[in-house]
Length: 542
Image 1 (cartoon, rainbow, N blue to C red):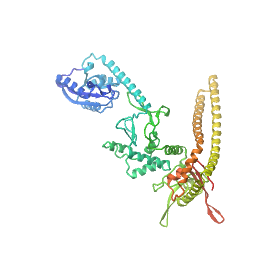
Image 2: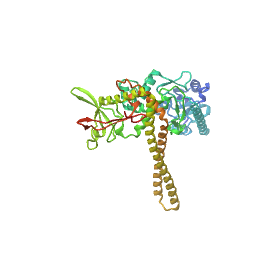
Image 3: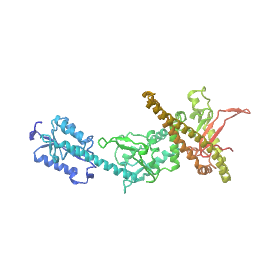
Image 4: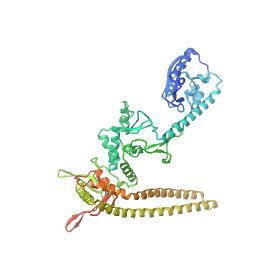
């Protein structure tokens, strides 16, 4: 290219410093040093400096840097015809992209490039060493990336928090940035979310109530603590945010890291890792949520995934959730009972009715309606009765509960064990069929397309069976805690002796589900069966 006349020079000084460059500790690497060095170089030659472009804290493996992009914009506008950096590594450490700029982009735009310490000047012909320098710079970046990653993994395995921003509900300790300490205000919101969800509320309704009360979302709260306005000041609570918080093990004192991993040190793109790749260290910091509430919340999350849509809690037109929403089932069709508000003669009351009937009409089921007040009185009466028995003769009542609970659980365990046995037999059958399938393929007696289709089907079925098999084994193991569960229920029921009104938290702590029959006549009077299935102990008769 034509060598420029010095009087025509409009120079851009480009400075970059990454946290990975010797950890930023060498004075010779500092932005101030680079600026002085480049200014002296240009001034000694009498070149006019158009502007100085700085990227402080940006990796050389990517070119998505604000200072660099601003410089490119000025090149496109024709303001610059010379770019100077201290060395090639300041321009970049990705040898392919760096070479594209030095060998193609700058020459095409009539821009001369000088890397002082590497003796690279595109106005000269003897720049053969530049590609090798770029490769060495990338190798350096790759090596640093490996070292940083291994250090981070080691620290994560030691239970140190390695994130840049503490999870909502915590802050980094002022004494140790790798230690989490509770933020009292945000922790209070976390406890509220877990408690409301664990005892029956939906993620959507929780988010709606937080927005209605003008509670700052996690992102807005974070920036307010910094005294800054966030990039999205209209950010609000949503069901996705609530559900993400509910799944985070950090709130029971465990550190789970490595959920995402950089795919390449060049692009910094991340992939979501599988659960077996996570780094889990238990009891690293003070928990916000107790284990009982955590386990109940996780059970509800799992149940919501497995439940058909007509069994999930829905918010009615009043934006409220019924006292028994999520607990009630139609005795005949098994659907959930929908919660509704009614107004009659100026009086407001709440009722539940079969959701299948409400959605599909009487051809599918009947109404099964019951008012919330009537149902609450039935439940309160039953709770007080069992509370009185528990207080009067605790030992006898515990023995009775152990017998009832043990019998029901044993029946459930046997049923699940039989299902596991059936799954095992089917998996063995699939293994034999796959073996036979391969033999037929080797013998040439089955077309390749048919072989691949059958193999895919068998593999899909086997994977599904194994997943169900593991879930059943986990459920069977829970039946071993009968006595502990009975004692927990006894402690809860005793508190109901003088209970006047019922709240959702109490209802969900004690009750697994309630089935409601259709109204029927008996001896000239209307009757309705209410069957209560209690947590841990099942159905109890008076």
